[in-house]
Image (cartoon, rainbow, N blue to C red):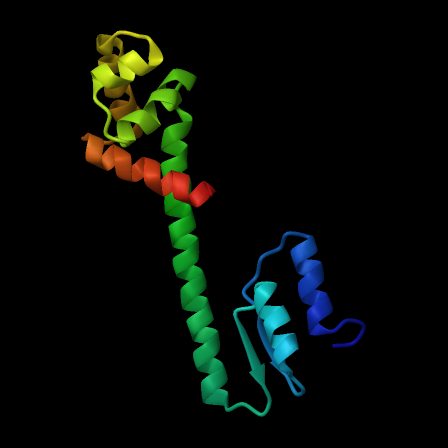
Length: 148
């Protein structure tokens, strides 16, 4: 590439927070270059000569993986959107519910009535569209793991 090599392009894309699936194709690859590129987010690192069939297979694999990742990210975003409607108190109670604590335990811990916890629990289920505490726990864990 005139003016910039692949490593420089990848560095610049990362600096701009532009995440594209990158497959390096080089005539002179080394293990340190490969490791550096992969650590920086490259999907694959191929050394010429390479058959057309193999290159096409690698590109197709990357496209499929990218589509799966986008689908998963969209699903997680939709889950997070469900949590955005919760009040601060509901967000405080949610992890306690997801951890399996009873209404009475949560009420004692927060210094409020277990009946109030029941009301919050019902509102959390309604706002998130969940039908039971198990589903709610899965939603919470999925969103929590994605943000870590």
